[in-house]
Image (cartoon, rainbow, N blue to C red; front, top):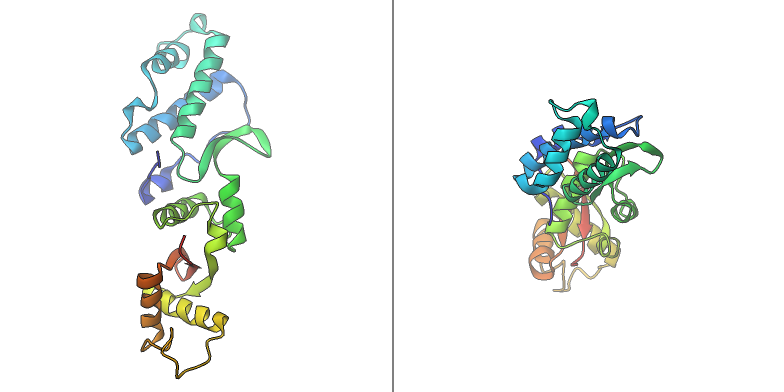
Length: 222
């Protein structure tokens, strides 16, 4: 299931859930709080099952006591929470420990998506919120981490999709070496570069994906 979060939720998202500890008694309440936030945002109250919730209440709930603690149950409950958080991860991300710090738990960009975006010149250090929105846009257009780099044709500039489309059409024509202005082939069958882009978009299923306010990926059909 593709998890969809809006921009307000992404701005509040618990990208880093916990750092600097591996103690289950410290991790359980932090993981629990993050999972509850995700469950509310996704409208999925079943994200944590009744058994897991009962164990959490017993181990780290408001009325829990030292006598209620059980190491084995705590480890199992922590695993259940980790799986739930991974299930709730935004598209293109996973939940777990950081590659560089085993005591830092949070949501991280999937390596396959990172490689594909880097191959298209996308700065994957631009912030997870922007990457989530870009991956969602690419996925909705039919691109994934396996076909993206093969469909990447270059970049276009423009503060609107129409401006970027015109820029992208001109870039594609120049790359193709179209030089016969008397020909009725594309792009000379069009009155301007904006129409040339619309021709590509509607007839050949080319697409744009916005990376930043004035930067777009130009993509061939998936």
